[in-house]
Length: 203
Image (cartoon, rainbow, N blue to C red; front, top):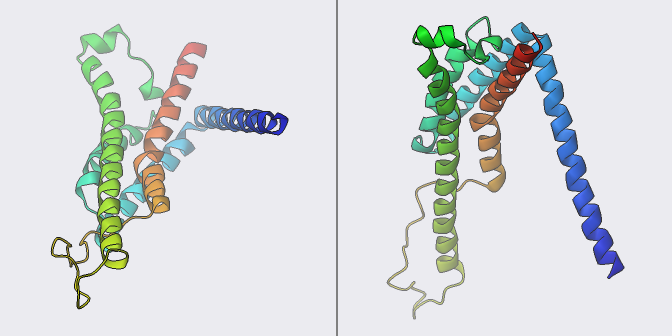
């Protein structure tokens, strides 16, 4: 009993320590973006170009369907518009009343909202596609390897004899696509917004 309690306490402490390290790392990135805005903007643009290139590459070379990646590709245009401004990330600071009178205020919250909603939609669509394809491949392997056959070695009449057309993505591949292609640039922009808010409060 004591060993079980000790194991749970150790696991909880490990999770807390990991979250603390991640928080410190993100804080350090915010400070880096605030102190080196020009270099951070170039890094963000390179991450964006690499992300878009990888997405196009996996669609062409690995037969990954395009439709789950369309929201992420559409969000790339918003990221490019934001990161192309020389004043990034400080242009992402909260707008004032003058911007509202000039008509820039609605776009100031629509664009950041879409920058989060579109990657989230792509995340959900990719995950759902992976689950459906994995289920199809699992059923195909079960029917052809473990299911009892009719006399003569034939499969049951209700078994689909053809191999599924869509490629099955491994869990590691799905995590890599979601982590790099979908969320890397939005998280970088979010850190830039945090740095801009901190700069606005300190100025």
